[in-house]
Image 1 (tube, protein in one colour):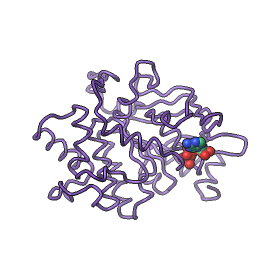
Image 2 (cartoon, protein in one colour; image 1 turned 90 degrees about the vertical axis):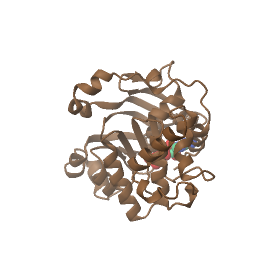
Image 3 (cartoon, protein in one colour; image 1 turned 30 degrees about the vertical axis):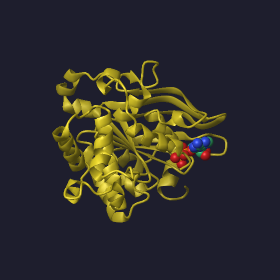
Image 4 (cartoon, protein in one colour; image 1 turned 135 degrees about the horizontal axis):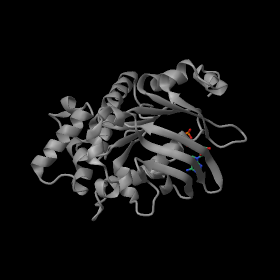
Length: 301
Ligand code: ADP
């Protein structure tokens, strides 16, 4: 992965006091009646719509004319060879790309009915609503397990007072499938946990500011096989409440964990582009494109 600045910014943002930052509902209003109208219809709806996205680093075109939808309460996997623009696209989804000096996009990214790049949109609020989990687990090293989850929620006014915070910490750690392992050691440093536990702690931390979408950038690449399976299982479980977009170079993982797959590629003449999108079952068993078939059968990449 070539992008690093944004991870630092994400960490800083999570601990920065957001003075009078509008709440998610102010920034991206939700239609409460719709949520109740039909759960099934909603789960088929797109949480994120990307249209004709071009991404540049300075003069370099990194991603070309990318369009896709990420369904609500589903796992969407972005797969493809190294350098095909997967991370760049992922970071464009929550406006984390623009913190890389010289990086910019053209095209549109919509979250439900909201243009995320509209002039009235607060990028910090976007990054809370569409949270991100990185390749290397990055809990705040000097903070306890408890504070890793509580800090951003406190600073953002999601909770006030000890008992509300206790409830939130328990509920986020439970949803991140970590509570039973840490409930008696909440005061210990987040850095004392195993890699897989740290990654689940980072997921709990992302959940603490009430996101709707979680972006995961190769979240298992630093983990052992057991920890990997736990994160994959967790990603599936999280679709009860959240929409997930995961970048992975591991095709078995994409096949195991995702509902929909976006296959990106790159070649000498072109910047990263989408070759094909579809249901994961279709892409893996009956790809329409020869390049997709070659990639999933391990002939390149
Ligand atoms: P992938 O995630 O598929 O490996 P990336 O999105 O990381 O691909 O990279 C897509 C292209 O953009 C690559 O050519 C890469 O070298 C380039 N790139 C990524 N990050 C930067 C950066 N910070 N500055 C300049 N070029 C970058």
